[in-house]
Length: 491
Image (cartoon, rainbow, N blue to C red):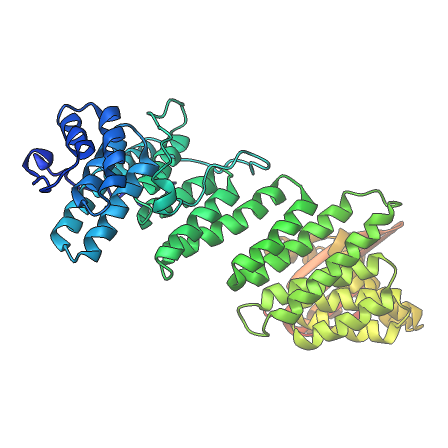
């Protein structure tokens, strides 16, 4: 939904201005002729004569008012705005506040027509979506020239003849800045409209032009930042990774307050670029290395606080995955030690650390981290799987078998809870015969909170989970197979 400043600017052209104006005592023929043509609304001849008068009588304040009006009626908005500005400057120098206000009112009247045409166009545009980045497109905005230069710019602008309401709004807001180069609101809306049109450079230049007039204007500042990141986001969305990376670096310069967000996007773009390459492409490793560097820069710049915690945790995780996928298990494990020190309760980091240390043949280290992960979430099948692998490597057979059983139960088992669980447990005599060991467990430990049944080859197994007690007992064909403990679960 559009969020644009739709406040109409209202200014009234001074009626009867020309007829009532006093004529300087020694008015030249150019001024007199120009005045007559204005009264007759023959604007082209009026402008010619009044331009002549401006050169002959640079101190005649009425010349500027009439010349600005004639140029505006001809659609020559740059020279019109310049004439009004020069008149205001001349009146101010003479300390003629009344005349300065009179000229200013007429300039505002013409500017408001253009501005309000832009507002009307945007109001009729409805909901507008951003377009793709218009790379290499013809520039739409140039900063208005100084009055002494713009006064000779007699380019004429007619009515907008296109079909796009957004482009129509941009057209009229742009003309409003020519008519009044000090119109801050016109720059605000113009920068906003250019940004949604995908004309990022124009949007940023319009915002900067406005900020020169109003350095502390929040809306202009936001528009500048939005344009800076808008280009990068559009390029990112279009999967133009290399261009997006450059655009995000540029966005950091224009919007340093959002640096961390842009650094994260730079890392993500590098990673996506690498994933789009063939495994044998020599540039793939460089892209992955750049991803790691980008995440390192993020960790360097992001403070260790609750606001950036998720961002930092994600950076550690992604860096470690990249290093591990490159076979750099020792480097990944070292990085994960750093990560788990900062985030001691992150199951994802602890699990990844355990898996990585297993790959690095640090089985004791793997067991330590995997058990820490289970303290956070004892129901994670992958953690139990790698704990089984690690314990097996350490020749801890009974513990290994227990972890294997838990892994199989959680990953493949059919869960039985509630009434279904009680029926299952109570049917043990029918299912298994009189020599089963389940009834003894019910007597000593009570009914479990969850039962998971699964097959391992031709053997039928069931694991009884006492989550709140931190205990699991596994039976094979009704006989005790293994037991294991873990930190009690709250849920």
